[in-house]
Length: 88
Image 1 (tube, rainbow, N blue to C red):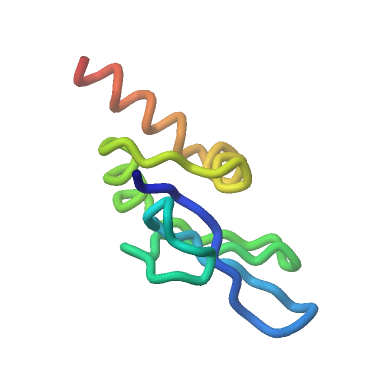
Image 2: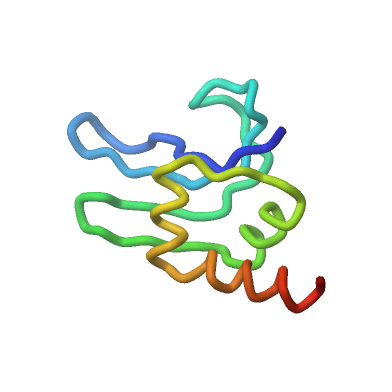
């Protein structure tokens, strides 16, 4: 199973996170399938590769709670639900 989760980067006391698609059995810093975004909690900046995120969500990837909140604030989940109703 694939999850969308945060991968920690940056210096001590200055964490930034990549949003990655990764196998659920991999550790947090393990090899990811694809980088799909970036999140800086200090500056509160977010970059999302929306087509890649939608690709993984359509194929059953589950976001973690934190990634779910980031995607919801960015409006990606609303777009995902619109695509789901359009094709069903």
